[in-house]
Length: 171
Image (tube, rainbow, N blue to C red; front, side, top):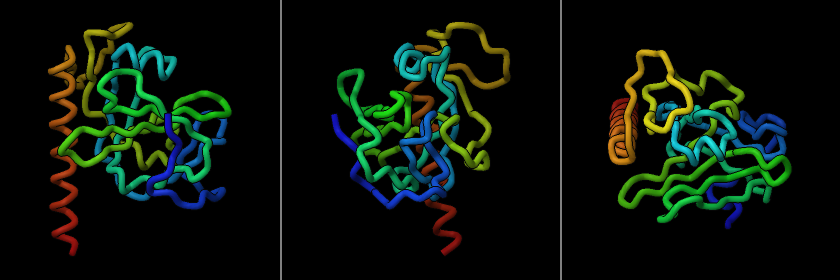
């Protein structure tokens, strides 16, 4: 278990993200990489929902809580994903995804993002084979661990490459 310590910044009443009760506050200062729906059983249990509506950000674009309002733990080995819950309400706040040789990604339940301009249209369903109910939309639906992880990883890498290209063109 750990508490938030990296990219810490003083939180104000102007935070644009928070957990359900509002105690675990944090800020997003950059554009999202992507948004997706995860149907894995761990996300279902963690979010207490039939699937997780998640928005992913580059780690440097999220100013994490400085206090100990979020407690992190891993639900699976290896501990690539640290899921953070508010210590007050116990609801999901934010998650750190650490894949070796890749930039760190922060996953935020989309409902925790107050500024809806920071929640793009979703790009895919992952772990769709573990769904509770069918979803009727035109999004790609990826089944199984490997296909889901590869599809999401590919989309994250493309978004990071696009971001780097945009930064070079702007500067």
